[in-house]
Length: 573
Image (cartoon, rainbow, N blue to C red; front, side, top):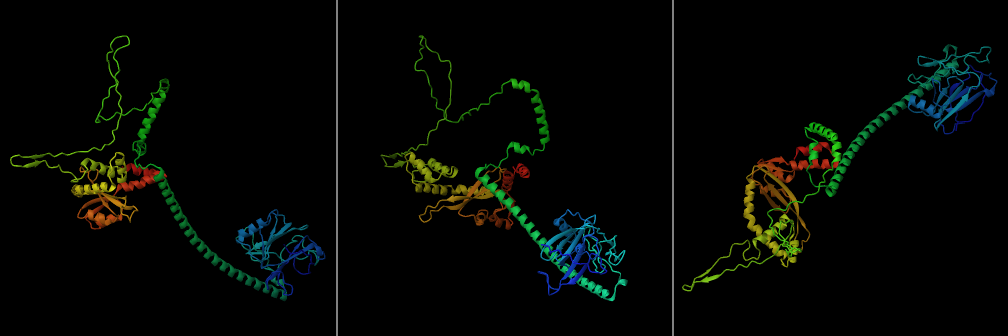
């Protein structure tokens, strides 16, 4: 709330009706919440031109201030506190405590005072019933207002300038402001007495001290603001870096999420369709022109084409392969005698084919070797048994091949094969089937070694490893373990097409080191570190695998529909 309004008498002095005169605060009657040794400015604003005896024609407002600032431009009195504060903030950047800011309208009959008393900001206004406010002239950084004397006696006021400034107080002018500036008046020193000169000197010293303190405070504030700006710049850079990091991390998570969705719900095929490949054809413009011509031709024949019924594309049944065994079953009438008494004559036939399946069947082979003896010399002769994979075993080569193909080509575990055999009435234990596979591996080892030599004779070899689950048959280890199948193959452009698989129980690079020991050439593989030992020796040259590189472009194409990734897929086929 603003202070209470009073109407004191006008003292008989040389001061004009408006007196801006700072005086020290008395200790016996301090203002509320005002620090000691603060200056209190008494601003007396005349309501209208009147003699000094009219005590109710003056208003006095007391508050603790350090400086008073007067706007050099008129302000619309319809504006409120927000507009006044905006003008002050535009000029100074902040509203300094213990300061007053005076505003006047264009006609000069209304005034407003914005006050910051240290506790808050408040605004007061007054309308001048008689007389007008006149702006002082600015000269060399000061607002000059000469002391006006009475026109018709010592108690009369000048009618031309009824509202001016005290000649005893200095207010420096701020040149860079449009709406706010500090006004000042210079006294005529030749007209002052000795006591007035001393008072004027004391006021100048007080103002100089105040300005020095204000300068020091502004310098400190400037240093604090510079430090604050530097801190904010560093913080802004850190936040920018964090935002960039989070943005990249968000893109990474979005890409991974899209990959998971594609892996779970999408197609596993990495091939592009013909339509997609044509998107990057160099002759795409020519194709578009040809399509346009075709469309024009079709539009021209649209009337004739509408009259004709479009053929229905019915699905055609594929022909059965010729290599299949054919069983001919003839269906003839029970009687060739017609009801009229004549004999029917065969004129043709209709043939329809059915695809049949004969389930696998077990059968026993009995190898009978006759014993022959000579009656004269008792020589015994008997034909030897042919060679088999497992001597004295019950499994024929055909059955062993069937078990191997079912397990390794069709990925059919032994326990499922056993269940299939049980449905056919043959009980073969898993241990028996496992022994058969182990014995076949021993018999096929020379063939595997020969295949390995063929692969190692090539100058370019492709290598890769893939995990495989291994079942543990022991009683203490029933949890499946992970093994690895290392594949080594010749290139697709090599006339010798060979692939060899090396099963190992881990992904250690030592397995590749042992397999490729002594070999020299170009190894096409991914960036797995297990192959780096061979590259460091200098005997093997590393070649990046384009299939692995293409896979990343395919993932980007599937998740982001990137045209650059699609172009890379077209180039890497």
